Amino acid sequence: MNIEKIKRLKHSAEIEFTEKKSLFIGYSAIVKNEEEALQIIKERKKRFSDATHNVYAYMIGDGAVARYSDDGEPQGTSGMPTLNAIRMSGITDVCVVITRYFGGILLGAGGLVRAYSTAASMALEAGEIAVFEKYLEYKIECTYSDYNRLQAILSSYNVIVDSTEFSSNITVLFAVPEDKSEKLKSNITEIFAAKLILEAVGERFDTK
Image (tube, rainbow, N blue to C red; front, side):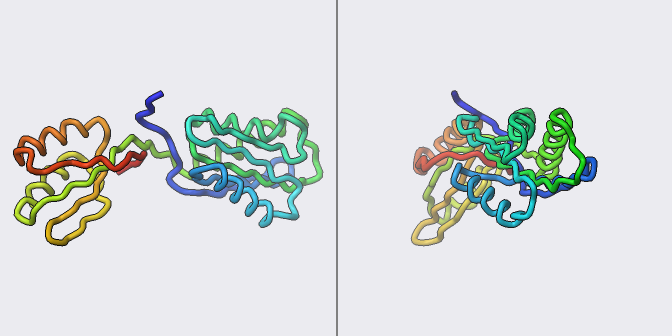
């Protein structure tokens, strides 16, 4: 499946709210892989080691990796609602940990589902959602006399310049939205009479 755009958080975030004297602390974070998710969960459990529960859920990539834990809450009342909140948001590459300090009043199964769903949604919203589109990464080398013209072309295609190395020639590493890459290559070939060659070096999801 060719994915052109994905949703990710802009930053990690922490929220809290109280439901019938139980304190819920929701935390959301960007993760690149399962190892990062597990590390965040470990850190949150250590920080809130005195909590009644540290429920979590995370999803990586297109959802092929999706895990959750009720951490002692009744089955299906916490981890799955947290994961469902992630799925409904459309966000990926994210880990949510919800810490609960029991306040002495039972919430019941329905109350727990609502509380954990609310905490997860609040934590995700606090992290802000950004749409990331697919970028193709390239390297191009040019002379000093061609550099200004090349800069002008690149800037008109919404590229992200990752680095510029000045040596005997100038080497530019940049990323361009995938839907603009073919037109950019044609433009460079036409203007520089095929003198400059774009070398593909990779791809990523990014936002400008």
